[in-house]
Length: 456
Image (tube, rainbow, N blue to C red; front, side, top):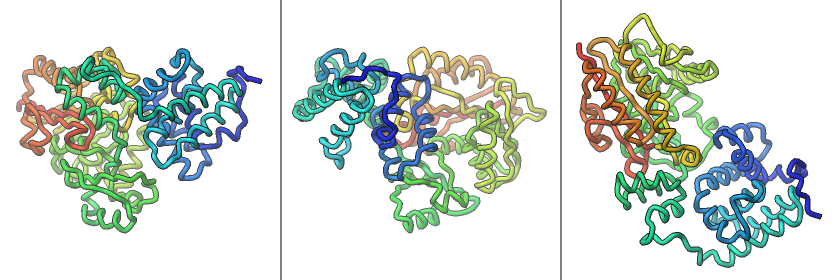
């Protein structure tokens, strides 16, 4: 008999499997405002899954969210009825099976199908399981004949479906960069993310880190834009790597490291990092200062301050003062030589690492972010001593959050001028006098930074 009681719990064993955990997480994500990385991290902390199963859960959850647009396009075509309105448990069981069929070649399609069917059977009964089985086997029979929107008829719709991005975002990229470059950017956004380790030059050298990774048989490559950043191309638990536990490396995208390079903090200076958690920029600034001077790492949320302190201690940095406070009201006794404003932003440059952002953000979000960003940089201007430097940075590629903010700021603050980024970092990562990186060009997050000098 079919069981349609959505409040009834499935037998515990079904959610002990990697695929069962993945379906549960995806269904919870769909019915909440939480970001998928938070849900995934919390589940894996509580889980007793093996290392291999934990890796599979991570792959399935992130993969389904990353490719949800394409998966749903296909399933809508094969599902008899309105796929968008079917039960979350059914919808996500279909998605994870199809994701495995399309993207995980080592998993036989019949195995992927059978487990999704079994999950639905135990949770919702035979009728729903039969629907899942029928849809997935029909997809498998026709998998080489799946059609997507014709690119010649509607390029934006084609790219949106095939590259699994919302149409409003694709349209902006096509208008801004042209279709071919937009396609390359969308493709890069869908890459599985690499972990970037920045070498702590206070303690070691890049060569030492390379030797450590080679000995541990961990695959890596050197960042093309920041020579002390190492890209880890295979997933690995960093806590088991000596270079991490000894504080020889810090996880930091090369674009974030470049923003600190742009600030160019010097030994003995006072630096304020106004949006600091988890402390990567503060720590790198302290390293460039040769651990001499003072870095105040300000963080709005008290719960995040200990992470800054722990990371500073692990890396051997002693000049960081991690404090709780609001960047909009921060009023220290001293003015700073350098103020870093790593502004809260839409995060649309980080879609490889956080694929759910593209489904959660809207154009209105970008506009709302821009209002707060302008308030932050406006307040930060008053914290910079005459002759000092203000660096404004984001992890987004949207002009409303980047160049438009700088233009509006300069209109209100004639005492500041832009110093060309090319004078501090490679011209390869600069555009129009600003630091600007892109996933498809630089193997980094999409990011922006401006260096602004206050008149003496």
